[in-house]
Length: 91
Image 1 (cartoon, rainbow, N blue to C red):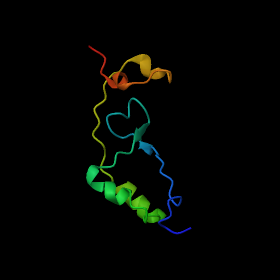
Image 2: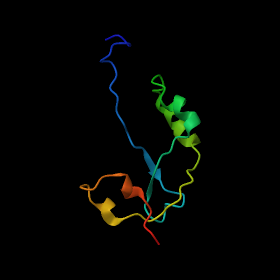
Image 3: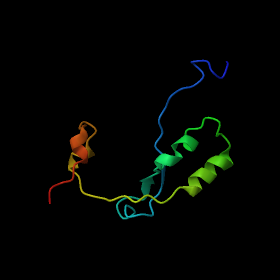
Image 4: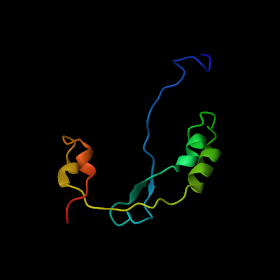
């Protein structure tokens, strides 16, 4: 199949996680891998397939600076969905 054939590529989504070493580490042992916006082009380059190059990209990522906050326990059920689920719980 030619490289530019419409069926050559399948658009998918993957959530990468890594060991939590930031402020979220006390909440959960895993943390999302957050790709800085100015790195998106490198990360989305379909020509980057070499495992060593991908490892170098992963190893070079800066540690995320996330601010944890409490949300409603409604997030515990897959039946609930909506933007209100990420709103902070009032103190």
